[in-house]
Length: 82
View 1: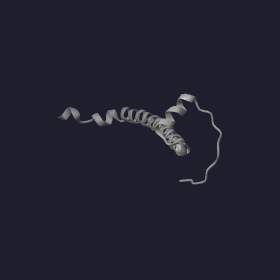
View 2: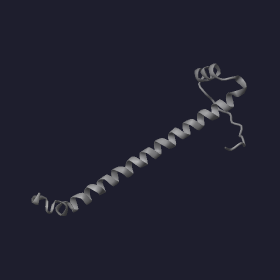
View 3: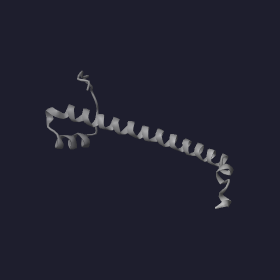
């Protein structure tokens, strides 16, 4: 984990700050905000990865169906014998 810090001046809605103050101590707000931002980034990255995986699976499924249709006649050879 990166331990170097950067000072930021941010603006948050008053209600959000009040809610944050209820759940964290005043001297630990920076840590709380950093954890919240880190979690949000992880969720976004997970969503993006899931979207890419879904696209890959859909493409693979189309390719698999095309291959299945291409070899369907060969797969069915000899089935009448059973």
